[in-house]
Length: 122
Image (cartoon, rainbow, N blue to C red; front, side, top):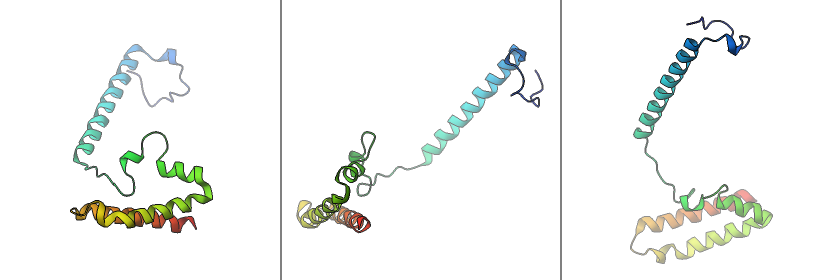
């Protein structure tokens, strides 16, 4: 196998021997396999939490998030959407899920989310 300290950028492809190509392919496959294994190991130890308030998955299908679409399409009037959303979540939090405190808190957090958006829009 050739000396890999040679500047490969200036060496012609036709000068690389089949044995060198095979060695490089083998090393590349081994490296790729090691990286894939490391990534799988990393993912298996991670826990993925769904944020139903700030980034609910059902609002993130397609190439653009729903809130970004609304901001783009409503422009300066998006503040009215934020205000309406705050009012909606504050109005229904107590009744929509009267028997589930966690879901009641979730609605209040959504109201807070939209209130923060409203404040940021000023």
